[in-house]
Image 1: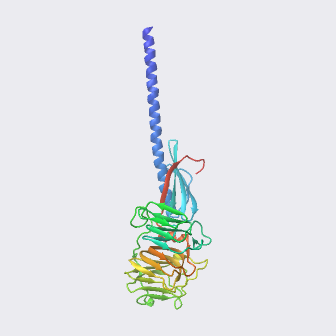
Image 2: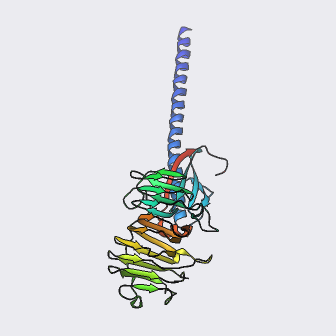
Image 3: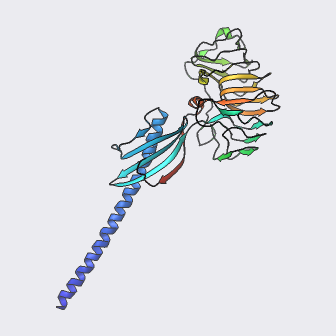
Length: 352
């Protein structure tokens, strides 16, 4: 009888140990599946960024062989919130992050100063566009007032004075930093020489030659490069790379923007260090990519539809309506590659 009792006790203890071992094994397996599901969900985010970057579909609603499904919710043309769920052995984990690219009407590497107070709509998105119009810098921003959606400054050197909506971000942003952003322009293979009828040094008078022939050109501007007169916004892309340390003269340029104009059809890349001279002022419809060139406008008479990427920008003594109209299509020129931020895990919703 005693022996039987001992056997029963030992059996009970063995079952308890076995149950504990099986429970621990199950918990361990579930933890492993959870870690694997998180990795799968992150793979879904990468797949979403790839699709957004390549104009692919904005949803992968059914889990494929990789085990994830994701949905990208468009906030505007250049900003998405992506939710991605990964599932392994019935364990699901869900993550989210923001995917974005170039949101700036004006960005500088080393200083952005507008000394006068501006009209509230002086820096805005183009009529009919979506999203917001930001200014940004890797250095100090100083404004007489803070128009626009927000003013973004990047560490370690960024700051903001007179800003209505200052937004600090880790940086620097651009070629010297780890967070993407504008890269230094370089001349692509196959670019055509500067057209002979532009002269030497090159000078285009829109009152004489109002229409530019489409193409990609490279011009030596050691002696300067001038755009002036009533130049028409091109109907097809004109991309100009300026090499040599010279001055881009925009004084007297008067491009009157219409609703049909596409700023990405006129892109000027200043490859080397230089200066931009506004002369008596200018109106420009296009993208000016000059991260090594500064623009000092005093008196400031600048009107741009598109986007500006500069080394420095100073606007003093506004003498006529100052205007920066951001066109979100500029991001396709200045904002590659797409960036991500705000990664976090969220409870799995009923619908992504």
